[in-house]
Length: 83
Image (cartoon, rainbow, N blue to C red; front, top):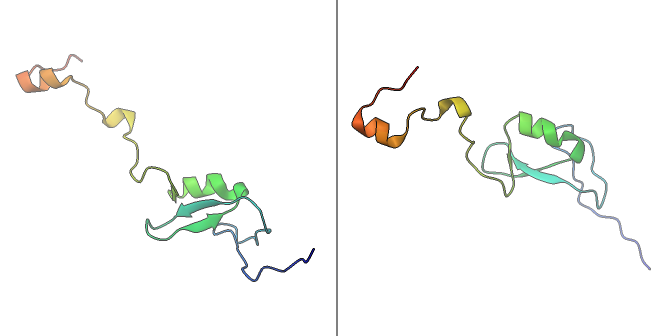
């Protein structure tokens, strides 16, 4: 069996650690256009930076406080929300 050395050197985009051959990586897009490799140790940091995971939704989820507080029918009829 012949062992060959890989000529591609991959590094984590967050910590810049050289990734081992066969090591599991997660792909993220920091700018929404280009994807980079992130090691499993920096996965949470990439999410904290607001990077979008490959295969994940491109838009952010709506925060609970920004949702409508009145039902749609109440908005149409002009009914005031009870405080």
